[in-house]
Image (cartoon, rainbow, N blue to C red; front, side, top):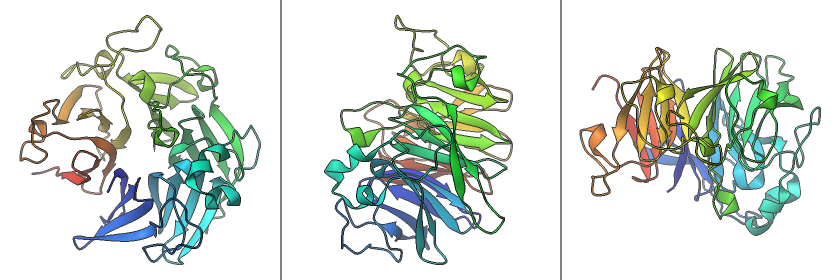
Length: 347
């Protein structure tokens, strides 16, 4: 099991993407239940392991929208909407049919680069890593290999979700870093933590709260936001820039303003009902309070630290995804433990 991302329903049911298991699963009454995918890398003619049809090549992110799951399928460069109640899967953006059924060794050639005004379906995305909906049901998508953020304009009629065209929010450019205060369209980012394996793009996860877009500028070791079209840094970058103009990584700044702290490859974001922002990064989870102060709440860089323990600051973790439930408990998809952790709010 490679738990890549987690989302929690309003009923408190967690759903996780299993990256190398090519599936989405839930945990019900202490049991792992596959709900989507699971047929492996070469899906043609193979049955899914769960009640839903369909195969997922390295799913990277799951969003819960009512009774539906919105899943990014990284290696297929696609986003699918799975209706659990109707056992139906719909392609809503990216990938085309031959890409979704070819062997995974060729899936990486099926990426694309949809432009302003293009329809979302087709070879339009390049390894999407996350999605987020705003108050208008417009769908924001971060692309690791595309190194950009796009918005899919909604045509929702109140009964179902659909999107009609692409709008560019942060355009694709070579990885770089721009100072705060620029319009999003003029800002350079480094969304991905690059890896020799093209399927393994990590980074750029999104969160939308009150129509402010928060995102992990993962390769730049910072968390940023887009508010009224302008980009600013809210955590990381506190030690300045290296000789190539990129923010320096690290794990410093607890108890100080988050913009004076350093992060190392932030991977995901979650926000509780009090407006506290949680950030997962290498070995740690950080909390940025509403007044902008950052602190470490879990994790250790001690390689001899145990995987489990009563003290969250004394365990070794590999947090990849974060989610907050209705009681403000924090769920963590953890590669170190190969499972799901929960940091209970009042325990």
